[in-house]
Length: 300
Image (cartoon, rainbow, N blue to C red; front, side, top):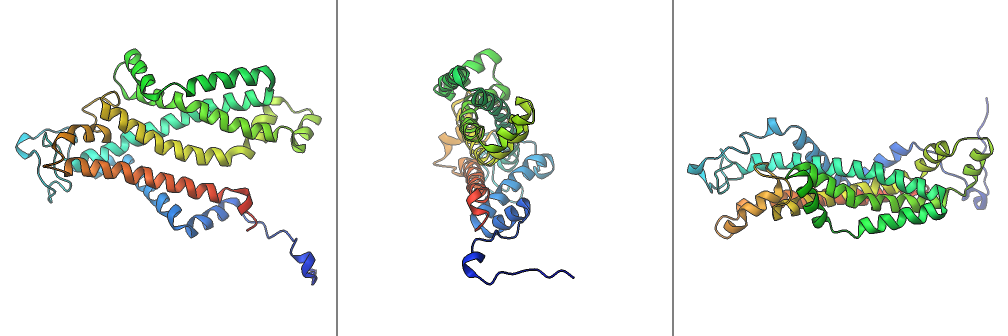
């Protein structure tokens, strides 16, 4: 039977590579150790759960108007009270989570796919192509989100699609610039030269070998921009250029209730808390993922 060899020399033993672990097992271990990241993970899971099961969790139709019960305080029938039209705030907050999740996920995925493709190809080709693409990205990044939303609202009409497109287009340059820096640092490494030497195509080298080594910053950036998309959607809806009523966006709820907040603070308190907790949880999850996916932490 083979006996494992151990080196008694401490000066050599300190340079031994620790036992390899599955990246997913290590990520879960680090996530459970970080209380803030775990809190963010739980909040994000709750947001997703509420959004998917809104028709089951919401006791009433969020658009149902009942003037006789307007400004009702929280009670057993209306856990969070009612607004100025007698609509159940609990149901509207729950359905608002669905809109926030839809806008956040759709806009981030759209921006991620286009931004990563544009930035990675431009960086891999380099030269004037890279310079031209980056100047275009800088021009798009300089365009204000609200102005773009107004333009798309005029072209597409008042819809949630125009909100998602406005948020996604502004975020494309951020993904493009992030992946560009990673590709520029990876394309000159030995494994890329080896792939070229054995005759692999440029697209295969880029998408099969280089991009997998640049996923960590993209995952963290996606969580940050997801939280940012929730804030932008709520801001645009608050200004009246976002999600069109009667859809129960959290921003619309704040806008409708701001003139009554002194006498009936619950009409703005609960949608405001929903926005704050959702953004806080997603940002904490992003901070935790940044630490977990940091290559320097693998051998800690």
